[in-house]
Length: 234
Length: 237
Image 1: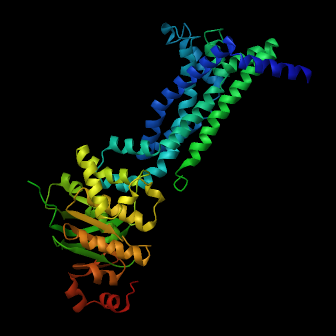
Image 2: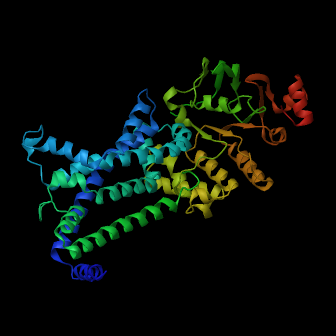
């Protein structure tokens, strides 16, 4: 218990003294996850909206696959990305392995199905409600998509934040493709793993607090935005 | 030169879904002016007919003949649905939608919205969220939004359904006023409302045309049993 309280106070002092190493790791975590979420939104938002608005034969199969991909084991994603980016892999020539870019790629693969599915779920009822109006106004497909994405923005923000929550807490895939290299690819989760194994509980705990703080902050955002509006529709 | 969507003619229009005829061989020419009431009970085909006119559905057999090219139909017409479909935005943004869609200049948009809002007495609602309004106010906004782009044809699908008497009166007054400028096709169950508003009446039953005449002729020479019951009993089954 004494060890724990000692580690607790040491962790707080690291946080409030803005320890350079701690700040560096936190900023890298945020950078990697923000980039991954942005790319996933770029792919997932239009893809989810497209699936909500269109009807085609393979739609149910595609939805089932995307839904299934939400549960992808991150370690397996990490392994696949590692094999892709390793020197002997098909994308080895780009030299991306053990760089933040590789970590972003792995996170994009993990997050995109989540954002696509949540977008689909948010836009589908909105489309059913708006469909006749938008058709009667003779809107073309891009105009319909724009209207739906804009009016569903609160739900879509929730989707993005859910993706962020998943990304910021990711460890397995990032450890494999990033290699947890100090000042290069070390992020909050991989650093916690390392410091715990080293026995530096103060730093591990400080990193843990920051991770919890960030996760909580985003969960509060999700709660606030998710309940702000549209309860009757969604 | 502005082409006119009217007159509008139905030629043997049939809509069949899953073996059921929702509209059955309709032949009718909508008069170019005034308010045409489509009346009938549930499942008579009133809403389907309006959806056909606005190309939200296609006939299985027959055709609808417009006076203007097909690509201009939606430009010249507007539809107010039974449950008003309002964007999850402010009333102002809702009114802006058709104007933006018709590529109206930004300065004109502002002016048109102000004029329309005053005309429909919704200027005090402009900054409110459309979904926070009462049923009557929502319907007013929906009609104002349909009217704002100055269509030649306005279709109203049971615009007074589920509204209290005061709201019905306000909506009816609004309809009468705008019917001076544009053609209105309106559906309703309510024969008394038809008496108050209609210039022409088209009576449907199970997708078939039972009677079609000007209001005065319809109420004077109701030949069919359904029309007779409708007029005398105010109940349609």
